[in-house]
Amino acid sequence: MNKSHPSSSKAEIAAQRHFALNRRQFLRGLGACVALPVFESALGPVAKAAPAAATNPLGVTATGAPLRMAFVYFPNGAHQPNWWPTGEGSNFVLGKTMQSLAPLQSRIQVLGGLDHQNAKAGNDGAGDHARANATFLTGARARKTDSTDIQAGISVDQVAAQRLGHLTRFPSLELSCDAVRKSGRCDSGYSCAYQYNLSWQSATTPMPPEPNPRLVFERLFGSGNARDRQANHRMRQATQRSLLDFVLDDARSLQGELGRNDQQKLDEYLTSVRELEQRLERAERMGDLPDPRADTPPEGIPTNFGDHMEVMYDLLALAFQTDSTRISTLLLAGDGNNRAYPQIGIPEGHHYCSHHRNDPELVDKIGQIDLYYMKYFTRFLQKLEATKDVDGHSILHNSMIVYGCGNSDGNRHTHENLPIVLAGAGGGSLQTGQYRKIGGRPMSNLFLSLTDRLGVQGVERIGDSSGRIQTV
Image (cartoon, rainbow, N blue to C red; front, side, top):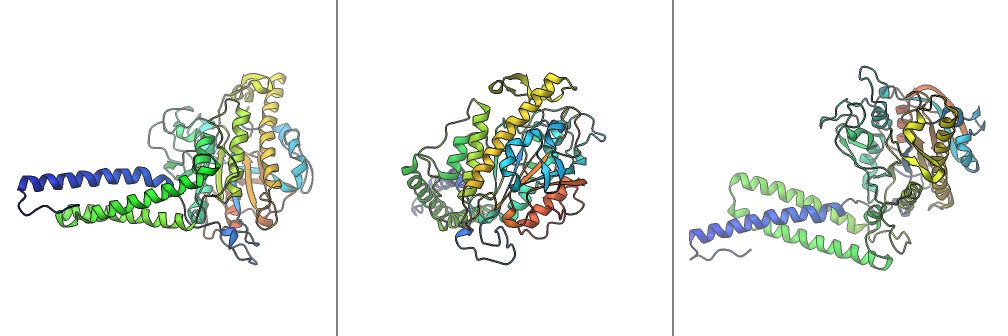
């Protein structure tokens, strides 16, 4: 910014200062809008340089491959007689709902006896669907409110992301095949924020998921076709670098013209800009964006729900394969969802069918819906199993994927003995090929065990946890 000429009038000087301050405010807003979405990055893929170790260091396996953790939520519970296997331990036969998992039986664990007591009604009355969602990864009781004073608890994925997020471009990835709602009244006096969000950054701040596959792809890998994505990414980085330099130069030129209070505000602003600059430097050290080997990104939200699930699972697999993130949640549908499934011949809504009251026709239909969801989950696991990781194992071997629901029996709205599958070997730290009857333990105890496997230290409690489950 040019200095005022000595002969300038006081009015001219004041006008120039006013212009400079307005320009600074404009640049500050522009910097926030342009820079922030691209700065969710940190260090490069650890798998390329991670040393082998006798025990799991933070976020990697003993062989140095990245460890991944994901949570997939299906709605409205499961039809219990079809869900549970027969037998126990390694000698078990999968139930009807899980028959598609038979080729992967040695890669999974079926866990029975995990409960979410805080999803029960207690003194709060109706609202089991909202509580099921809100409690599933937090283990906390959701405050019954349909206003802005929502409160649940920090979710296990974010507990891990806060400690591991600096290792990847994205600390965590939140996905959904449902609508996105942050406010409004949904289930029996509970805010919609509970039913449409699975991940919670803090007790009062949910992490809104992204339902649009194209936007997920562009967030992970950039926009444009395969040839243009890297060039577009570098251009954005160069633009952001120039913008930050311009903002810093312009802001510094104001320092001698501001009063004490404005000086303090300017210092705070410069601090935030420097933090953005440091994040950009970390992003630049990571080099080019990973190449998903796709010529074009996916289209928007598919009209067919099965196609929507399939493409979101594929994007999650790509995010793990490219080490763009190691922690993710996928909300297939919020609890209480009443979607119809004409593609499998079921015109009635899911929630309606789940309250079957032992009507044989509705029981058959809820069984078909459970199979429908499991089919796409199986396909996802097969993709992870078929993809080799940097250490020669499969990505599924180096992952921990929890598939389940915060409602057990959708017909009765129960929250004991939740339907849970744990897939993947956690880099060899999990004992797969088992049906384990845990026996009335908090689901949150499983969360502590999974964070241990990730090498995260110092997590003593999540939600209502009472200890760890050592047998998984």
